[in-house]
Length: 118
Image (cartoon, rainbow, N blue to C red; front, side):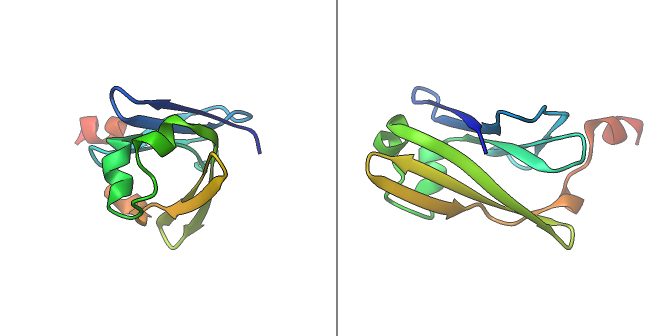
């Protein structure tokens, strides 16, 4: 698949999105994680705030320098029992790292439209 990606080193934000799909909705799961969904509700993108700090919790190899030198970033996802499982694939220099995000429960997400009606 073709992915677009950008790392903003000043604000420490990593954005990855499938370049062939159109984002229909963005889902904010926490202060640090936003998922982009297509019209079928499939995960096609992710935005990570404080990315180097976030990755530092799981993998010390993914630091700001690694992120600044990305040559490829993509994602894989599975939808199982009301949970999204997202795996980020990152390549920088001669190193490729696959890093899973924590499981994200769909039930924890409330659409802003639904929330405004409650």
